[in-house]
Image (tube, rainbow, N blue to C red; front, side):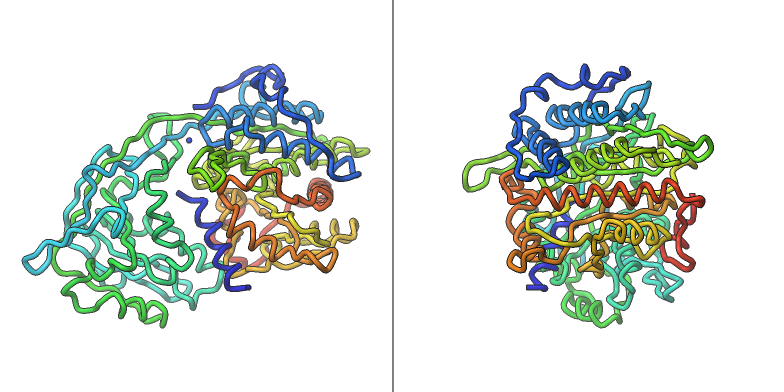
Length: 565
C-alpha cells in the first residue's frame, strides 16, 4: 500500500505544474458577483455542527457545475471569485484588494504548444535522428517567441545542480556557453529531503543553465521519474495551456529567453539522444541511482524547434481582512491562503462528465478558510495583528496567484509576518488528527502545538516527508520571500477504526485527482473540516497575539536560503 500511495501522491503534487477576469473597484461584493451565484442550490446538511454545515454550503456552491471547474481566466473562475468575495463581506471582513474592493488583478500570459513545426533532431556521426512528436519527445511552451529554432553542440550536465553546501557540482569542468544542455530530472538520492526537493525544481535547473550560457535544454526522463509521472500522462496533456505572470510591458516574468528551446524526451527514447556516444542511457540512469553521475560533452549537435500560441489573460485574487485590535501590531498581517482555481472543463469520464469540479481541490480548502474567518470575527476580541484572507488564482499553473500577491501585496510587503495555507485536505474518512506540514522549520511550531493542545486535537507528522509537499503549494511563494509558513492538512488516524484516512487519500489520488469525480458527492467529513477551521483560527490567534513575529529556526534550510522578510 505505501508504495502505491507514494506514487499516487507524487503524481498529484507534480501534476499541478503544467487560464480574462475582470477587475472591481467597488467595495460591495454582492453587487460584483455574477447573478448565477445566488441561484445555486442550497446544500443538504450532513452534520449537526453549524460550522460544518456552513463549510458544506460553501463547498457545494464552489464545486457546483455552474462554476465550470473554476479554471483560471474563465467565466467559471470569476463566478467563484464573486461568490467568495460575497462570503467575505457576509462574514464581516473588510476589503483588502485594489481600489477599495475585494479583488487583486493578476496579469497572465497563456501559452499553448503547436504540433506543427515541432522538431527535436540529433545530428551525429554523419546521420540525422529525428525524434517523433508525442511518442518520443514533447516541446515546451515558449513564452518569449511564437516560433523558435536553435541548433548547437550539446553537453550532458547530469541533474544540472550546483549545491556547494553539499559539495556537489554537475557543471564542474563543463562549458555550457552557446550549447544545448541535456539533463535528467530530480536530484541525487544522497541529498536530504528538503535540498532534494529544492534542487529538483525545473525552474531552478533552468535558472542554473541560463546563468551558465546555455541556449537550450533537453530533459531526458528516467524510468524512476516515469514510474511517478508516466510518459503517457505527459503525452496526453501536451496541448494543455501553460501560464506565466505578465509584467507591465506585456512580457512574461520568470522565464529565461536565452534558453531558446526546451523539450522533454521519454525514457524509452533516451538512447536516441545519446546515440553513438561514450555512454548509453542505461549506464547514465544507473550512475544517477548510484550517485556517480558525471557530465560530458556530446558529439554533434541537437536541433530544437517549435511554435507556441501566446496571448494575455487576466485573473483575480480575492482579498479581505479582519483588522487587528492592537494599534501597533495591527500594521502586521497574518496571511491565510487557499487556492480557488481548479482545472476547468476537460476530457469526459466514463459517464460523459466533462466538468472537473475540484471539490477537494480546493473548494474544501477555501471553504475551511471562510469558516476560519467567521470564527475569528465571532471571537470576543480580534487578534492583535491583522488577519488577511486570500483566495488565490492560478495555483494549478505554478503558484502564480500567490507569487503575484507576495511580489505585489496590497499591504506593505514588510508587514507580512506568517502564512497559513490550506490545500486539498482529503477528508473522506473520519480522523482524529491534523497534519501541519512545515512545522519543523520555524517558531510557528509553538503556536500550532499550543492551539492543538487547547482544542484537544492530535498533531501527526507528515506521512510522506520524502515528497516535501511543503514546496508544492501556495505557501512556498511566501517561503521563498522569507516568510515563515505552514500547510495545514487532513489527518491520518482513523476515528472509527474502520475507515482509514490514508487509504481514502490513496483512493482519491488514484481515481479522482484532477478528474470529474472530484465533486461534492464524495463522503466528505465536514466535522473534520470544522475541526481544521477551528485549529486554523486558534493558530492564527496565537500568532496574531504573540509579542514577537514568527522566525525561522536556526540552521533551517529554507530560513538560511531565503532569509527573513
